[in-house]
Image (cartoon, rainbow, N blue to C red; front, side, top):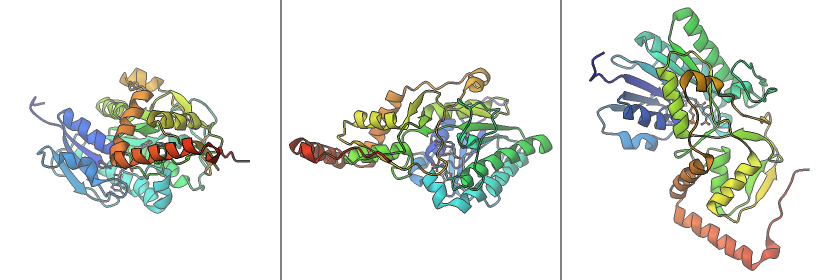
Length: 345
Ligand SMILES: NC(=O)c1ccc[n+]([C@@H]2O[C@H](COP(=O)([O-])OP(=O)(O)OC[C@H]3O[C@@H](n4cnc5c(N)ncnc54)[C@H](O)[C@@H]3O)[C@@H](O)[C@H]2O)c1
């Protein structure tokens, strides 16, 4: 290949939280990037800093319509999908359409260009798992008709059609299963645990934790995840490969870490668990370590600080900080009024 040639990557869902960081990473690596996004749950502002670059192009399009991209394409990254429970409860039919018709259009794009195809699947394909930690050869336990199924089954279908395109049509594909990821450019109101905890803690409001808070998750900082996506795409592997941070924490402890990191007077309040909310979640990343030489490097303490710094600006740090301080001083002057921790019966 000509040494001055820049490979062309298409990032579907590229103006979302993860996709926008992936666009940055690909450009850093010398790729030309076409970002395709319908802006259903993503934000144009996530990639606005790339406008004006000759090696970056933004195309507003729903991938449920056929996707046409000019010129050669080396890699198609398919990240387009509502991803937070709040988003896929709001857009259940769009989520199913994007996972099915959208994924087929994405695969067709890769097939037409002879491109490598990466599917951003999810740990949700394991459902509420019976084995722990989750390895890639575990088939999962998903309720096919519950409210989460619009996302879980859309992703399972995406995996199935990706595997079929590989088997039947020789498309060079890789499936990665992403576990909970966090970092700057998450939306404050996307309904995921961390943005909710941070927003509540900044406001000095009770921090709401589902159930008894003993359910576990593992949180991967976005730069680590993007490094894994890049390595998976550049490898010759087919996957599925788990990408996530194997360090597990209970949701209650995680909420408390956020409160402590912000220095907020907020207290934990426990609310009913959502239907089919998984009890445990931790990736086995042996495959990623051995096949991609990948593992997460950013300690949670550092990742949390960077994310909280981002939200401080996003939420208006001055006013958020003032509310925290005001609330703390009111509580100090009236200790009897402190709200008790509410635990569900
Ligand atoms: N963030 C995580 O913790 C996590 C965990 C597991 C899997 N994933 C997967 O990674 C991908 C990115 O997730 P995210 O957290 O960045 O979510 P996000 O909502 O921020 O990004 C998804 C992007 O896809 C776009 N999109 C949705 N439907 C589309 C359509 N039909 N056509 C074109 N664009 C469309 C949205 O507008 C958005 O910009 C998703 O596929 C998600 O399932 C993320």
